[in-house]
Length: 230
Image 1 (spheres, rainbow, N blue to C red):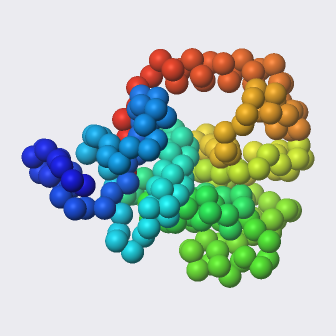
Image 2 (image 1 turned 135 degrees about the horizontal axis):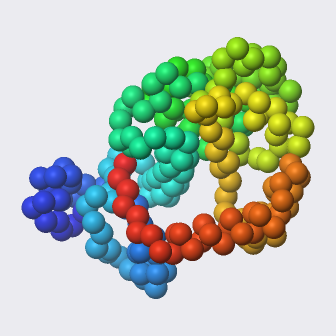
């Protein structure tokens, strides 16, 4: 940080010479693409997060994007409007993370634990189970992992990173609390609607419906404005 306003210092605690990473909202996207080689950028202090001196710039960019994805995925699973920064956001909620050993899976586990989740289950192959325990998760097999564990107590949130087979997809659905549970599909951006349809068609979903849904989603994004802060 080389220059800032009085409000930035008073409200957000930003100081001169701080190392920060900026989270650019959608309305900044075109400005960024035109000025990729600039040395300085003017951003809202509310879009800035502190970066320790021990973390280099490349690591900071990756970590910020990774944990924001995990944070937003958890928010998508909330049924009722709540303070998104409530440290008890997941209090009493049990969750399952598919492929918990991945970078994104680890980020979801860490944030869910920090936000008070009562139980965190994560699927992975056996060589990753000890690591998942150290993160605070209960490790499960990466394929058929004992659905009977959830017969009596269903889960509040299930996070998928890969679209499973039709049979396994039904199994994931069956362990979600029907009254207040949600499934969140986390995946990198697909290149086209056809790519999206190929993912969902494997589990018996109507590809025409998903094309219509994708169009509606893009229309909503283009007409909305976003403001977020970690």
